[in-house]
Length: 284
Image 1 (spheres, rainbow, N blue to C red):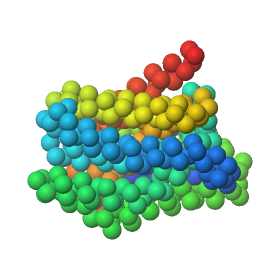
Image 2: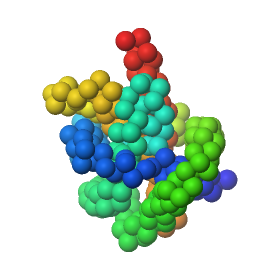
Image 3: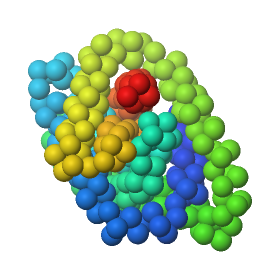
């Protein structure tokens, strides 16, 4: 089974669900509370790729192939995951801030992801004959992200009650859908994942812990509220694995499922680490 046929509807549904949760007030939040929004976007858009690149240059990643390096940078350049909104709610964070950051990062990374990944593939991709068709990537992201988000936003704008009902259904199936994707992908690439899990699992865990720690540190330095701090930790640590997998597997872009393996392992470690974080917030 080609993984792309599973991840495409999952990504589309996740983006449509994000649009259903969006309200005009979420965008006004940028003007009303610019500090936490700008700090969160800085952490997601700039800091996370920088930390990821530093890790790929460290001894920790010295044994990883260029395909895995590309995969690591791909997940680091992806926008925030829509599941972060649920995690923020569970951690008693600022859900409105979470939705705003996820929506803004989804739009901004339409432009930053192709630029960063073009540089990454030029740096390490030539050794394995991997090149990035930027135009096709832009078109694919617009079709799979901008369009469903926009449709969801319009539905919520004109039919808020219907949007809420659909959103309540979709948010229940989002996690099982991602689990299905990870399970299918695991069985298709079991040998490679098992062999590389030690080094990749450690690399992904270090990346998540480093970025979430930086999020907490920035929130503390700028004296954000406890709710805002918890949201920044989750938003900076939770990336859209479905989008990274789609780009890696897409016949129009990389057409290479090995590049998607870091995103699969990232998704696993991300959920484990952030579930532990949510548990800690319950104790406090």
